[in-house]
Image (cartoon, rainbow, N blue to C red; front, side, top):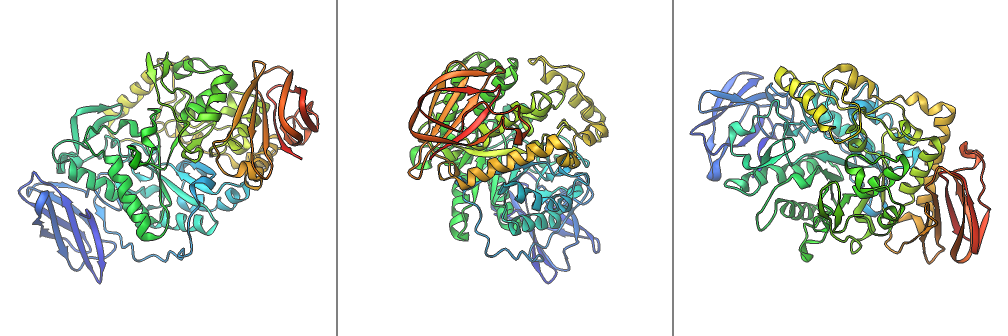
Amino acid sequence: MMVGSRYLGDGKCTFCVWAPLWESVDVRLLRPKEVVVPMKRLPFGYWTADVEGVYGCARYLYRLGGEVERPDPASHFQPQGVHGPSQVVDHKDFNWDDEDWRGIPLEEMILYELHVGTFTRQGTFVSAANELAYLKDLGVNAVSVMPIAQFPGERNWGYDGVYPYAVQSSYGGPSGFKEFVKACHAHGLAVVLDVVYNHLGPEGNYLADFAPYFTDKYKTPWGSAINFDGAYSDEVRNFFIGNAIHWFCHYHVDGLRLDAVHAIYDASAKPFLEELVEAVEELSESSGRKLYLIAESDLNDVKVIRPRELGGFGIDAQWCDDFHHALHALLTGEKHGYYVDFGKVPQLAKSFEEGYVYTWEYSAFRRRHHGSPSKERPAHQFVVFSQNHDQVGNRAMGERLSALVSFEVLKLAAGAVILSPYIPMLFMGEEYGETSPFLYFTSHSDTDLIEAVRKGRTEEFAGFDWPVDVPDPQDASTFETSKLKPHLREERVHHALFRYYRELLHLRKSTPSLSLPMRNVAVSTIGERVLLVHRPHKMGGSLLLLNLSPDPLEVEATLPPGEWVKVLDSSEEEWLGPGASLTCSLKGKTRVSMRPWNFALYRIS
């Protein structure tokens, strides 16, 4: 059942809403002229009405029981914000001109995560589209957009969205997002959209007024859990599966990033996630274009990405937090919060080879065993990163890696991620060492909620050795401070880092042993702090050397057969390094001399 408003053309529109506990439901049209139309009850608690004289600008509310008026839970546009009326959108009235677009295969993706509001000074889809030529020149080929579902006010990370089908009005609304996706495809960039199916935000969340969308059986860290396995859950599932189809069909996105699937509580025999995968696979088959689902999960459970025929959910890929944590702890020395479980070189070596670090080992942070073996899964099912919105923004002061470590360490982190055997993802601005923090910001209107967010934000960092006087999320300056400063790209050090990132991305795409995610990776630890990563290939393999130490090291290494020629060295003066100590070629059993935090790539001659 398709919920929401569906414009049919010639002034005709169908409205459909799920409200099983009400005796009557009307649709009240506010524009172009006010009229109240009774809706017809259908099986399973749906209500529908076919209305004429409705055009793309029509605004409306649903009237429940003759008294309570609310916006459409499946509204496609909220031009007056979360408390205002919904607006009909004519999705046929847009020239896509991307019929030849076939997408980017998952295994070839190089992701770039951005937040629309802070990616540019203007914070709109239009201004973001103006930066696509820059991203293409950098070398990424897929843009991962943080949530754009309508949220309260004009500034938010997007995870407080309350209208899953509506495009944030302050970013440019439905037409703005369509133009952005169209421009991405014209530049050869895929679009992965972040969606939130584990909770809704608190302000403007009227779903419970319509139907049992939520359950008291479970609790999420962010509020009421969505009812995916109780009474009436079939229609709840229909709402969210329909949402995924909505983004694919009406906005031509190439993939969805599913936020925090570990907070989707579902004890049913056929979980919601499995049903969602089935629906997207069916749409992929009918459309002739592969559409992707990428999960965020802290479960370290391969069931999330294991094929359905093998008992898994069948999600295409997932973010690999363990790779980030293992790398971050080594580069920063941080040991608080969940970093207490990390900080050892063999852990990073394991992540290079397998993905997960915790595969049913004891976790001091969780105070229990954690994870399942992941080596069975193909490498393209893991997305890795040294920074993302969570790992930066969920720090008390929102510090990027550039504020925590030296220039040499930044180059090492870039090499580890981009030339890893997995799908790499960059966080906006990291490619030139952006100095603005990425803070948590909101623009709620409810004073009690504002105070609760402030208090909760402070309590969140109790387990970390960070300042407790965190920036006020509600203060507009917190948002403004988080905007990128693109003029930095032209400054000497920042421009050198940008060139270094661009070279790494070029090498990844042009080198057969690096261009695709692969499982046949051999990792060895030399001494206590040097990693040697061998990526073999029939057309010639590659060697990555990482000195994960603040000290210069000289170690004895036994290399794979053949003569290995240096291709890139982060210590070279070209990259504003201190000067290389590694020789131009290496062979057999040899002594390897590396600068502090040195990263190097060698290829077989």
